[in-house]
Image (tube, rainbow, N blue to C red; front, side, top):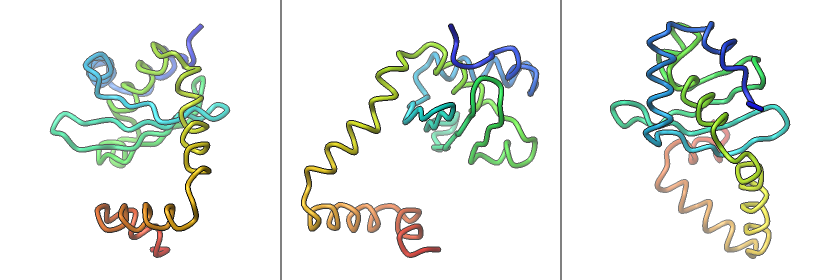
Amino acid sequence: MSFFDTEAWRERMDERWFDTGVAMAEAGAVDLVSIEDDKVTAHVTGSVGDLYVVQLWAPAGEGACSCPGFEKFGACKHQAAVVSAANAADLGKVKDRMARLRDGLALDSREALVERLAELARLQPAVLAALEGR
């Protein structure tokens, strides 16, 4: 059984966008980050190398993407890529990913966690902004 209703998502966008998204998923452009309840979060590498964050609610619910196309049209090929990738994935492994990350982080000392976050903030402007509350 599929996690997402492919036809419902297909109807949300131009057929070419959907097909391009499926091809992106097949090419490995989707990193499924987490599945929590009905919400899937993924990172998708776009056609020119930009990384986008996609969140979708199953089976045919709402979705969002950080790409300009989503902002302009309300749907995008990156969403189609996530639908395709999630429907083809071993969802158990994806669901365990954040639990494994949390378990690993829980083993670190407070000081080690602070240093990891500080290093991420130095290297990633979005992390710095989020940690500074901007």
